[in-house]
Length: 269
Image (tube, rainbow, N blue to C red; front, top):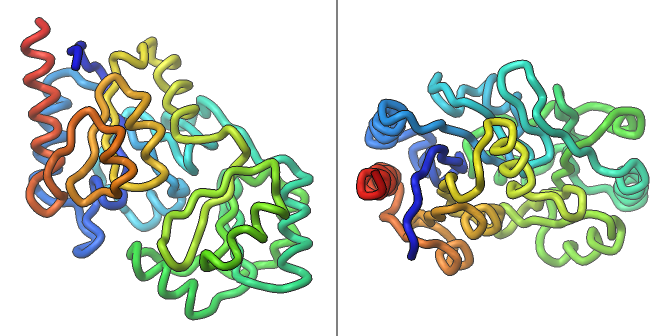
């Protein structure tokens, strides 16, 4: 594997920075980010989460990052500056609204500054409990037809996944919960696109970036980055494309990944 100076690291949140079991960020992870920052490396988030979840629920425990790639790359920002956004086509949103109108199931709609769901059942409760965040507010989701929607989350099992694919052929379907939920974003959208836009905004090449993740929605960014890292607790698919597989989040995997990057940079000086 060729080496290169890494000037920026993009981190997934759940299962990478934040432990699924404790719903906390390990102290070793916080130490890792401090050391990277001290070395002059820019730090970014790359997540499927909405900014409201990050901010209102303090998922990052007051740690600061240079920018945020959210909603699987569909809404990217630094402070109050929107670097890139790409909403779902209105016809696809309308198709989803029609689908849940005919045969209702829980479906979460995400705008830039709000998120809302049509109904809550035990599937929603289990899925949200699994990631340790609150139940989204129940609202009249018909407002989604009048506002840009960046991500839709149908709470469905695998049996209904193909039904979603047929209803919104212009969208990507990414399963983030093995049993209960998927993310719906525009076709061609991904964390990769958001990372490319964010890197360009900061004058970085992709060769100067590292990405660390554990889930199915992290595969493309781990494969694309100059250095790609899979957490030891990650899915097989993300491990298959990683340059380096670190240990699990419970055994200081993130800290070890950052040490690897710092050592790599030192060798390249």
